[in-house]
Length: 135
Image (tube, rainbow, N blue to C red):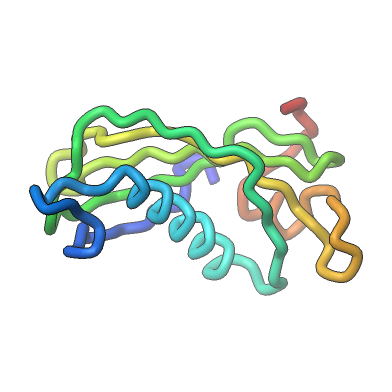
């Protein structure tokens, strides 16, 4: 996933304050939607993901009806521990202006046992993960 997965979103009325500025939590929702769509659109096997950490740094606000691009790329990961850091970049489609950037650390779990599992091979192919790196 060298170039990353791109989720496009138009800022709607439920995303913004009275002043038409996107709520802080809207960025979290967009990141989660981008992550889930990336998995749903590219993996045949359902995966159970848990978010262990989220971080966002806001640069400039998004406004009502802005068209956004949320790019998801894989940062650090540890195959055996089933941990992946997904990096997010939020930008305006028209200008490319960076609005925010951040990451989520996700963990993979087995549906039946509920225990953490190594990163599934199917996800490793999607993310273009080749070797074990420490997170």
